[in-house]
Image 1 (cartoon, rainbow, N blue to C red):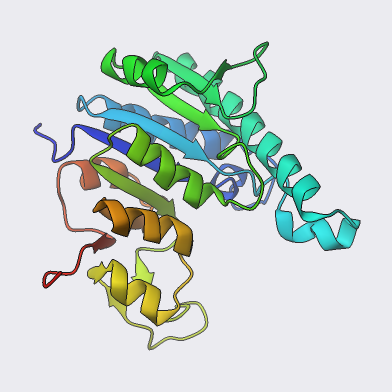
Image 2 (cartoon, rainbow, N blue to C red):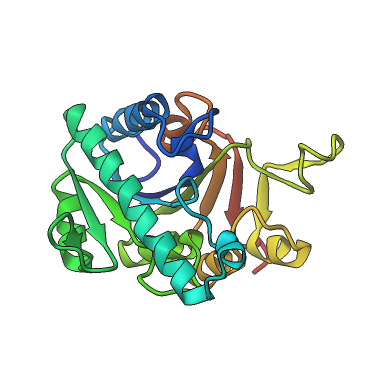
Length: 241
């Protein structure tokens, strides 16, 4: 089956690995996500993945623990490494060759992120799993994902969530919230929406990188995005830009 994109960057939240029970890592959820990535990979698309760490530690808990921001963000970045190693092991169990690359050196367990090495892994058909964000505090994993998408020359930034796109308001609180099929970067930033980090959106906008926000919980949705089905919300440059 022909795909719309040759290379993609897929951003997963750490919470997606926790499943409905909110466990740190739910084996059933981890396996399901790995199967979805493996299915998408079978189409021939080169896939890089950024995984968050919110199922293990969220920076907003820093105040409760009395941590200052840099310490909190460092803990969060290490949490992403745990998730990435778990995803790597699960993909390898399914016969998908993968590599974990980190923005913080931990050479006993993963490769340090070097752009040219990551590109070679992708070209050889390996899934590249990217851990530890940007390696610096004050940046979200959304921002890290947008940065890596640009560094790796991805055709699109795919943000997998637990809702079926971007809404005008939180659909769980406002039944009349409108879902957008397409939305320009400019309108997103002006509207004050927060589904995707503003720094990430600004990076995409400055470099004309399209993004798609879609529901990961619907089985087969990664494949559907890759073959060009109209699901989720597409973020792109304004037509009159």
